[in-house]
Image 1 (cartoon, helix red, strand yellow):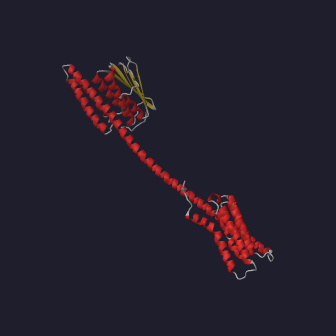
Image 2 (cartoon, rainbow, N blue to C red):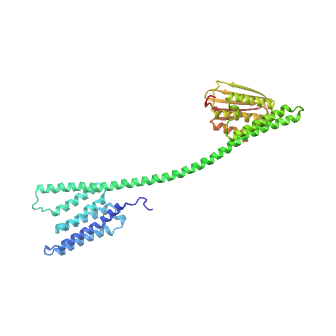
Length: 402
């Protein structure tokens, strides 16, 4: 697999320089040595022999080795020691070969970053200055001077080599972090787009469900009441009262349909809070169905948030509509209880009951969805022949005073 963070141009150039510097310094030293007119007897053959030995060592312990073997610490150490040893032999033979000794400073970088870098620089410095020092005439002051130079040179070159590698390594980490950040930003952008698409689709679904509930809670219930009144009008001679109620229901249904499209609250809640709206709803329902409905409000009344009031009002509407359509009841009761942290709505009747109170009919599902939507719960208890009780519990989130 390709390295996502290859060596920089500087690193590649420096690695190439380390490979060719021994050849360049050895060639330069040899040319200058051969060009020197002051050659001792037998000096040139000895120079060529030692140079050949140094060249064979460079090629055999470095150039011909595979790259993987060449990077191993043992191979690096053996190659460095051999180069330094041949450089010392050549420098003691002819001081001009101190030029070849300089390659040891470059090879010391192969040990970095570690303490062996300083050791390699120090060893190179000893060979470099030791081969040029006339030990027979050396004084303590001169030796101390050379040692000081070696110490400073070791710290400067070794430390500089390690610092350069550390800086390059840090830059590589920065490049990796920047690349990872860019990748994360692209992934987040894709995720954000997916979330926007899902939110849009969820919004469409929620809107469809809202419209379906509103149509069910307004138009369907209103039409049910109108049909009931018109059928009653067909059975009596004086049908004026039933026709009047049917007209009123039709007008209310039309108003509610318009409000549902605009996602507004029921008109009963526009100028009144939930207890008054429930009383108005119960009075109209009892008058249109002929079923005796008892309404009771308990606890300290507090204004609730519009979402809570609309939810309880719609649940009451749906429960009363179900009584009209299915229960065949003669009495019903509606209790609204303010108990502090929660508000309870109980609607019960003495009708035929529900065979499947946990069914998935649209009316029951609509009530459950509405109540869950505001963080509440809905329970339906029913026994065939003994009536039905619907209980909704919602948090008492307070709203503004009207």
